[in-house]
Each structure stands twice: as structure tokens, then as C-alpha cells.
Image (cartoon, rainbow, N blue to C red):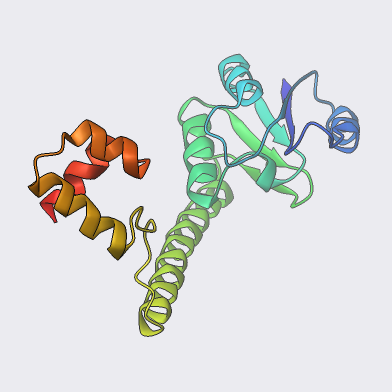
Amino acid sequence: MKVGYARVSTSVQNLDLQMDSLHNHGCEEIFTDKVSGAKDKRSGLEEALRFVRPGDTLVVWRLDRLGRNMQHLIQIVNDLNERGISFHSLQENITMDKSSATGQSMFHLFAAFAEFERNLIQERSEAGRAAARARGRLGGRPEKLDNKELEMLRTLAANGTPIKDIAQMLGVSRTTVYRYLEK
């Protein structure tokens, strides 16, 4: 049985193109989501993965409709294959089935691409942080209190003003006051 899965990122987008393609490919059952691919919780995908049985083929319009990233895509497809379920992407015309030599090769290529993607992301992130540091930016969350407020906080605390009152005066939580006092 061919089982389809279609997803659009927002509720204003339309599933028609994907649905038509999946129906034309012979999908008997189609599950859908209207949610960003970056979200972990996608009820339509979860239902589709529970629904498919050994011998079935899960069909998507394009690879990016299924996984959040290459690593996630590989994880899903590997899980399917371990259960005896094939996978097919219509736009890329890719069929993955571990029972064939071609399918096994595709999995190895996908795994290599996933590792490559992970390494590129790490390299770009580190390069961006290094460039920011070179410009004097350290990153992280901005400080809640400036130097003048910090001086006032320390003076009030040294004079025995209750932490609750200091926090209220400065418009911060007691935890923030304690954190600044520890610095």
C-alpha cells in the first residue's frame, strides 16, 4: 500500500499540489500537517508512521516535507526500513529500500551527507562567533542592569535593604538581585 504524507509550514499555505501529486502516484491513504518542519511534534507524520505496515511505501512530495534536517530524514527512513517499509520522494524521484543494493547505497550517501551538513553547520556557527568576538561582541543575553543600577543594588544590599525591596525598586526578580550580588 502506498501511504502519503504532505506538509505545509503555515496554515495559510495550501496542500493541494502535494495532495494531487500523492493521489496521482496512487496513495490510498494520505496524512497531512500544517506546521513548520522545524517542530518536533507533527501529529500527521506521527499518525502516518504508526499507520504504515511492512511492505508499504511512505510517499512524500519532496524530501524537505518529511524531515527537519538531513539527520532527521535519515533517522525516519532508517526506522521505516528496519520495519520493512519503503520510502519514495516524488520530486527527487528517490526510492529507498534496504533490500536492494541501490537502496543500501542511497542510505550510505544520505548518512554521509547528514554528517557533512552537521559539520558545515558547526563550522559556520564557530566562524560567526569568532567574527562577532573580533568585533567585541560576546553574545548571550544582554545584562538587565547597567553600572549605575548595579552600584545602587550593592549599596542598598550593604545597608541591609531587603532583597525583595531591591528587586521591586529595580524591576527585576529576587534571583536576578542575588545573581548580581554574587558577581
